[in-house]
Image (cartoon, rainbow, N blue to C red):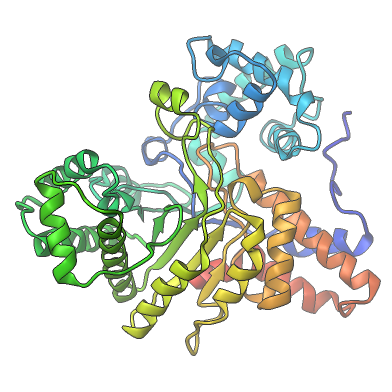
Length: 465
């Protein structure tokens, strides 16, 4: 299997090959949303072994291992790094037809030049060779970014973060621009009043003001938007199951705020109205700053209650939700449009049955001079694979303008994930190459090639900058 990852991997016709190699592959990576550690980036981390750079914190891999009957000690437990890697390597052959198989082989090929099949028998040699290369001076975080041609990274950050690592990066020699992303979900999550109050106290400490009224709460959030903006923030991010069902006025939201601050019980209606008020308020703030608002919608999280209690969130026990998305999404976007404060917005859908609804929602809002103001975001989480990304792009093509699409993002916690951009670009070129060769698109390589270049990088650069 030494030639499994070859130059024309996944490219099945001559036109796709030319589109990829001549137009897609040379483009730099503009990774506008991920979960990389700002600390690792600021400190130009040198990873000690393949586990640290590849498996540490990667719930995609934990999920595959658990499905294959691997004991938890080899996922998140106390097994040694090499034992955990060996357990993953032994799992890889079981991932055939899962994107993990493609990603894993692409990643080893692009980072270490390793083309061997990943399995239990090859694990020791892969471990030794990768660790030897990771010790080299050009395999630090910055060296990896340079080798992978990464020019921009948008991390994901809590509003109460002091952004010290981003501040350090601004004056560093890091080859990529690293910007914070404002993730304020905790600001309107009244389902857990104790957690919300604890976070609000932390917010008060950060802004150095008592937060005892609704107006001071909003002022504190606005101050954090200003601070993030001063450090180079260009986007917010939100991950609710769905948008709020209603948007309360300030008087009602103030009453809900006071009840929450003293621990009184709240109705579902009050919680929804408060969340709607805050999200609409923040949308106005983003519009004033020229930020992009990202909405990641449709996940039901921490379904395995026992494992969540033991290990916490983001451990690989989440699923696609079937909540009704369209009315509350229309409510939020419509309200911000009515106020004249609708920011650029990216809608990420997790349930493929909603693809057409999301694609049509993007066409309802627009602004002269801005191409694709409301974007149907790339296939996300359970959909960031060959079939899911095709579904997303087919819906966008049928109901919107694929030519304005801002393309791929890693949404990853791993420095090894940048070949996902290559994976996406190969799919894009294969889809368009098929259309050109079967006559459903003009066989105009220059015209289609320019669209490929734009979707690969230029559209995102224009959209965020």
